[in-house]
Amino acid sequence: MISTLIVFIATEETYEAIEMASIWVRNYFGHFYLYLGLGCVLFLLAIALSPLGKIKLGAKNEKPEFTIWAWTAMLYSAGMGAGILLRAVQEPVFMQQNPPYLSDLPLDILALEFTFYQWGFTAWAFYGLFAMTIGYYLFVRKKKVLISSTIEDILHNKTARTGIDVLTIMTTVFGLIAAIGLGTTQINGGLIHITSSNLGLITTLFLTTLISALAFYSAWKGVDKGIQVLSKINILITLAVLFFTFFQSDILKILGNFLAVTLHYILDFIPLSLAYGSYDPGITFLTDWTFYYWAFWLAWAPFTGIFIARISKGRSLRQLLLGVLIIPSLGTFFWFSVFGTSAFQLIEGWGSYNNEFNGVFSSIFVFFENYPFSTFLNITTILLLIGFLVTSVDSAVFVLSMFSDRGKKDPSKKHRLIWSLFIFLATIALILLGNAKPEVDILVAAQKLLIITSLPFAFFMVFMAMVFLKELLNVSST
Image 1: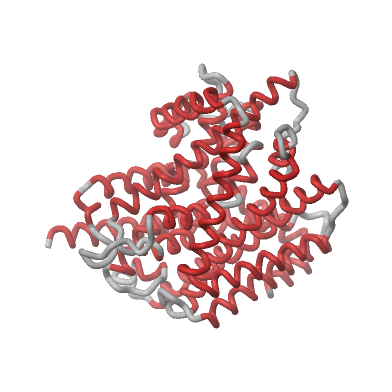
Image 2: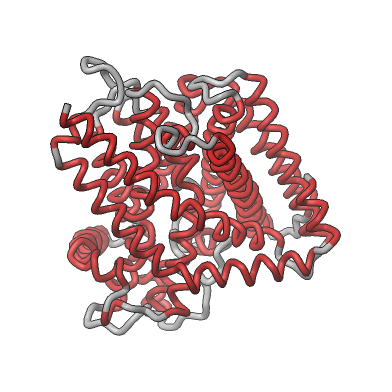
């Protein structure tokens, strides 16, 4: 709340400082993020495919706590959620209309390949590294659910370890505020599109209150009765929307693109990850897109990774890592293949493109206007946005509660209530601030702040991975 007050007093100055700092991070450390992303993917694959992959998170004969279906639903809802709805149409079309680099590939294939790249293995590798490390120390070494637990055998300075945990909490809070703010903005945009009415601040505040209340209830019920159930509902509705669109579109074209682009993505993954040679889209494009995505995934990695670790008891490192890298990535690839290919064909049928899909918050609603039952689809999309926001917030509230309740695997409900209220009030404050200072986009500033706070985690991840690998090698040699 103090930080919000400071921003209110010196709004433009704070915004300019955040803008300059985020650009500085992306300019000077953007390529480091690329190398880190590629390194994470290769590191996780090496562990998963080596004898170390047999190590189980828990007792040797312990079975997974959740089925593969429930596990996948929860990790996907927490890790991606509303983002795939925001970008389903807008990003592939943008990449088609503004190719990242010159290529012999057809524009449709190139656009989808770059979209796959930004939503694929690298994002989930950032999550997977934290999930693997935290899961090992939680279920094998029996340590507390804290980021600092991963390096406490090496770093004995308690103040430094506390600082790492505090930074994790701050980054998680900013990420949640930005997610709720952006999510309610898209929901509001969908409602305006459907009702053709000018819905303002009151609607946004109501949506924020609704999402926060549902997230609190879900977190209060816990993983088994709250988060798991809502995550399954989200995924079932998402699959229904996905396959309705799939069967209403050119099925063979979508399947052809999905298979072709997935193959190109796998073959081109290393040069794409290094922005090497002809695969380099240039610093401006990288700064606006890839560096920003990598910083955002990094910022969300600690709390998402901890949540994935919490639900992965009884799985081997191989099951965890291959599951995290492959299952959600393939699901995301098919999602973008369906919506991207269908949008490309709509544009081709129109004969010209006048930025109909340019708006991040409106593109999917405009897209559904071209399909049967468009109003029903748009209402369903709004409900999905609410559901995904709730599952992102409730899992984060649960993780924050674990932090504040001395690293307990099942934090007290008092901590869940406190964090739910704090997130709600902080989001309300930010939205009100954004309306009080319309000349500055406060929500974009909150997002850009994540880019700044993700930089320490980028360096910490390298240190954490080295410590963890040493731990595994020592265990395997004894």
